[in-house]
Amino acid sequence: MPGAQKPENRDDAPPIFGPILGKVLVCVTEDWFALSHFQPLIRRLSRLATEVIVVTRSSGRFAEIERLGTSTIDFDYNRSSMNPVRELRTAGRLAAIIRNENPDAIHLIAMKPIVLGGLAVSMAPVRHAVVHMTGLGFLAISDTTKARLARKAALSIIRRVIAQPQSWLLVENPEDLAFLEQGGVAPGHHVTMLGGAGIDPAAYPSVPPAANAVPVAAFVGRMIRSKGVAVLMEAARLLQERKVPLAIELYGESDDGNPEAIPNGTLRSWSDGERTRYMGFTRDVAAIWRRADIFVLPALSREGMPRALLEAAASGRPIVVTDVPGCRHFVRDGVEGFIVPPGDAAALAEVLERLARDPELRVQLGAAARAKVLAAFTETHVENGIEAAYRAMTAAAGKRN
Image (cartoon, rainbow, N blue to C red):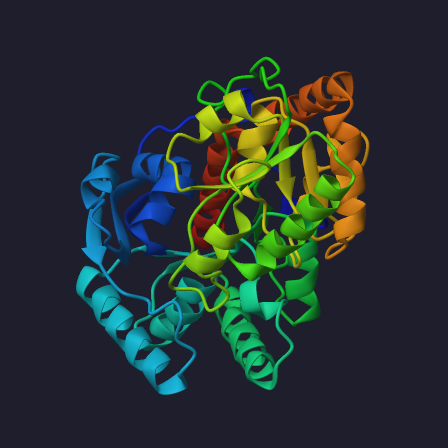
């Protein structure tokens, strides 16, 4: 990618001699999302800044965030709202926090905080703004009139933020960067590509093949339509008709703040308790990969860099994904796993059957998947990429002063 800085290995990372910034506000929609995906970011920012404040909605987990060395501010981003008047009011409340805290930098994670934060910094300017894309959400998924208008407005806001000389863009795959550039966002050299949220290989060690009489393919993620869970259930039906020895397990919960949420009643109806099982939410994801044989994510639309994919890959499980941005950035067909067309239940069933019947192939692909995580997608890689971005951003600002 022209201009994009690749994540570095720890041995190549510049040493931290002391903070390079004063206060940083990290804006992320939910406290659980901050904890599940952004602990490496928060840890590294806590070393690069004298103070880090996480501005997020509380579900009762603020104490866990604060143990990372940060402060917290409870803030509701109204994730499901697309009402322009309500959005402006929410941005105004965020601007009031910015004026009160007077940070050196604001770090905006994912689409809702990026859009609201972009509006807020137009009301309450900050020295540095970091736009951290974790996928494009409605920017690239929906084609309704309402979504097209929202996409146009969001791209305009991102363009204005990135046009500031002391801003920076973080992305998780080259196709998201290309999409933004096609929409008029011009980061130039002020962009860094991260390996998703990063994985701690010690927390997700390579595990031996699961001792299942019937192999298990597991989906781990939010139960929303764009993840392709309904397609997976259709593939499960085809496999049962062919009497393929494979069980499907779904791990996760319905995301009430998302208009694409799959109702709990539907999830329960999909589970027969034998070959298709809805397991619900669990925090012990590593235990899933001690139990399951195959990771499957049949996403219908683009992803950033799915953490669930990296967790399974680090554990040495073969990866089955669809041919969408983010997923195909990690998986090479026939190397770390298999890639199938989005929405194609028959193709999905075919590769799941192949893996169900070939335990040696599962081991071979799983080993390649773990090797790829270790090469570029660990927490260390992500932390070093974040530090490199912040150092480059502040160094460029120093040259202008």
